[in-house]
Every structure is written in structure tokens, then in C-alpha cells.
Amino acid sequence: MKRFPKLIYFFAAIAAIGTGLLACEPEVEGFLSDHLYYRPNPFVAGQGVNSFSPPIQLDGSTQPVKVKLLAVRNKATGAPADELLQEFEMQTYKANVTPADSTLDLLYKKLTVEKRPVLSVNEIGGRIEVTSASSRVSPGTYTIDVEVSNIAGTRVVKDACDIVIRESAPYTLGYTAWSTSTMTGEVFTGISEPLNIKVETDVTGPNKIIFKFVDKNGTPFNPEAGEVYPRAFRGHFGLMNTFYKVVKTPTSLEWEYPPVFPFPLVSSTNGFLNYYRIDGAATDIGVNINPVFEIRFNQAGTHTVTVKLTNAVRK
Image 1 (cartoon, rainbow, N blue to C red):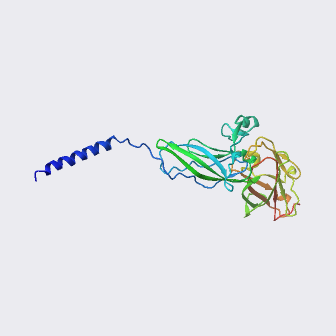
Image 2: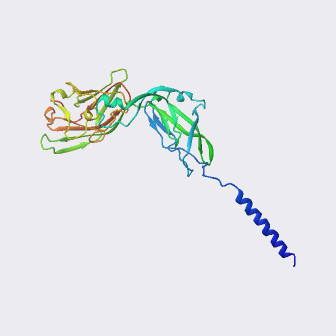
Image 3: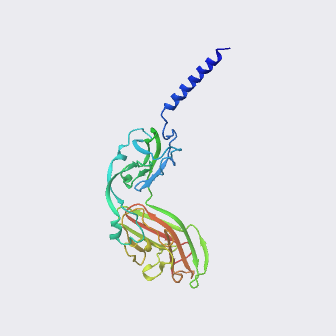
């Protein structure tokens, strides 16, 4: 019975020593998750177009993090894809282009020529960038390894994201529609979608954009004679390409344009929508026809946009 107090003192001493040892262990600062990932995955970039992914997903890791690109490989073969790390001269923005930059002089003050690789990873946050220099490499699927570090340590993420460089279309066609309206009073009498539009690109031609409006037989209306014109108080291509004046011909509306993509660079009154009117006096149905369409161009050359009516013949 007399031994119990001594045992109590013994265990109490052991507990005190243990507590002291635990108190001496350094505290781990920060947190670095083992579940670091990109979303979307795969990340799809159009060939010849500047594209940016969201930052790497950190799963609660302590910020800031630094991300370093370790390797890029061809997904199909596993071979190094060092061509994506090669630097090429390309036009880049020094500042955002705004509607106020309405002349070529003002536009080019916002641009500079830099050497940039096809693929890079931003050190802060890990955003993936595929530059317009991607036009110099083959379309395909690639994968990357990255190193992520913060105050808590460093982690290597193998096959962190698949990057699909897809052959880019020369243009992007968005919303299309057409309507009819009375000759006076702007009473609209109907709308149909989609508008019949054909786009042809000649990459060897001069940097020119051509709009043609033709009847159901393929006969062009005459903008020079006032048969085609922008609708009042609506957006149109002339407002988005202030760098060159429109040229009206007997068969088309034509503009030169600066080779900075996607073009147009800035929107107008109604986003990137083009509102045009074919005067009812030039049609056999005697009402105005109002095509609306959204189009942007992704590469240099001559782009011919033909809008074909299905409900009227030119008089």
C-alpha cells in the first residue's frame, strides 16, 4: 500500500517529460495538398490564338504558391515536346485595347513585339498560357509536369494537365438571324434563324474583310447604290473597325484590317453583332430585310462573308 504514492509520482514525472518533449517539436507552418489539379482538363487552345487557363486548383493549400513548368510531352508518344518551349517573335499587348484606340497609331502604341514560347506556366498561381505562336507547331495533345511550392514545402505533379492545341477555324460565327420590316414605321413582320451565311478565307490574299449580300438566286445587292446599309442606332462592322474606312462597291462592303486577332478587337453598340438592312425597294417582296450576325476572324488573309437571302429576289 505504501508503494502507490511513489508510482503516482513516477507516472506524473513521465507525463511531464512527454509534455515537455511535445512542446519542443516545431510547428508545421502552412499546408500543401497532395490533390493539386487543373480544371478544365484537358485545356483546349485554338492554334494561333492566345489562350489562358484558370490557375491551378489548390485544394486549400496555403497561398501564395509558386508553380514551375518541369516538362512538356507529346501525349500520344510520351516524347519531349520541346518545340512548345521554343521562343518566337509575336505581337503582344502592352495594355488593353479600348474603343478609344480608334486609329492605327493609337492601336500600335498598345502593341509590342516580344519573343515568347508557345507554352508557358505563370509562376504565381500556375495559369497555363498558349500563345499565338502555337501556329508554328503541330496540332495535338500534350501533357505537362509542374512543381508547386509554398511555405509548407514542394510537390511535383506529374501529368498535371493535358493541353489540346486544336487547328483553329479562320473565323468564329456566333448569333445569326434575319427579319423583315415595313418600308416605313419600322414594323417588324417576322424573324427566322439561322441566317444563311457562307465564309471563305484566302490566307494568301491581302488583309481584307468583304461582306456580300445576295438574293436567293445569288445575285448581289448593290451597297454603292444604297441597296445595303447599316441599321440606324445599331452595331455594325464599321463601328468595330475604325482603323479603315468602308469601301462600297456594286457588289460588296469591304474593309482592310490590322492583323491583330481575334478581330474585331473591341465591340460596338450591341457587342459584336452586325445589324444590316437590305432596302425593300431593291427586293421583289417590297419589305426591308434585316440580317443580323456575329463574326470574328482568327487569322490573316482575305475573308469573304456572303449573306444569302432565301425569301427575295433583287429587282
